[in-house]
Amino acid sequence: MAAKLIDGKAFATKIKADITAEISARKNQGFAAPCLAVILVGDNPASHIYVRNKRQACEEAGIKSIYHSLPNTIPENDLKELIHQLNNDPTVNGILLQLPLPEHINSDALLELIDPAKDVDGFHPYNLGRLAQRRPALQPCTPYGIMMLLDHIKETYKNRHAVIVGASNIVGRPMALELLLAGSTITICHRFTKDLSYFVKQADILVAAVGIPSLIKGDWIKPGATVIDVGINRLIDGSIMGDVEFTAAKEKAAWITPVPGGVGPMTTATLLKNTLTATINQDSETRDIP
Ligand code: NAD
Image (cartoon, rainbow, N blue to C red; front, side, top):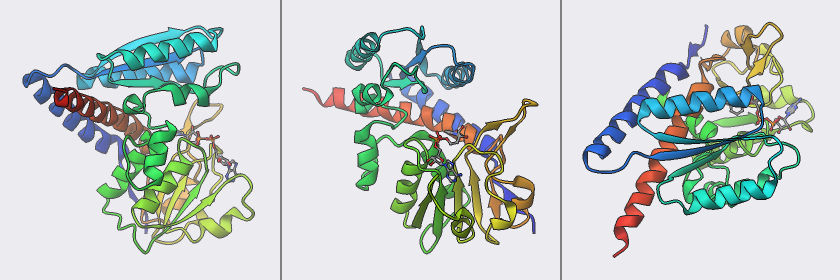
């Protein structure tokens, strides 16, 4: 039986509509619009497209976005100074540092400089640590969006074996922490895993986040599994495909995300959600000050 499609595009549209309504209601109560500062360094074409889409989504939701588009040659100290300024600016609620950064810049050091309360990507060690300690604060956007999709299809999590392929700081690792928190049993596979198919075949929930087209073969999928394909692989003809052999996997899975139109739109929706959450938290902190 063919799997049901998890329509991330439609679900993200609904979430964005809810966020837009909440921001509008807050404005009617006298609150300022949330404000997201976006920092883009260099001229990576994919990064420019991502930033343009994120800023457009902000505008549609009623979130103000401030844009810092900086040259590839910018010294690391200038970026540090900018982040300090944005951290200390009470009118800025969220800070997004678009990755990847040029090689002469230490991305980890800069991400760690962002005020965790404004870390709407959820990449700061504080926010990852909170997730690891079962007290999530601002959650990394892509795994958070995947959890929303899984909740939406009424995934039960407990007594389920979740296999995550890919162990990056921004997707695989926080994904494992989210699913662990939800009560699943976790296996994480990565580039040093011997016999990937052995693990994938056991997955009740499979999350593929590698960046290799069709790495996961359709006949590895356990019948009835939920398959989440995070991969975005641009082919020579310009088309985009995921990490999973979609057509064959669809015949075995119960649920599957398409690429495009699955996880991708949710990542933008959760960025907006985190920006709103950060704003609400900061506004309530301000009101608590006598
Ligand atoms: P990354 O390169 O940082 O990490 C890739 C991971 O895959 C590593 O942990 C590596 O060990 C593992 N890996 C590499 N080869 C492997 C193999 N043969 N078998 C098993 N594991 C292997 O990548 P990332 O930033 O986590 O992104 C992964 C993919 O997800 C990319 O295609 C990226 O474009 C996509 N992505 C999509 C979204 C979205 O919103 N849809 C967001 C972030 C990333």
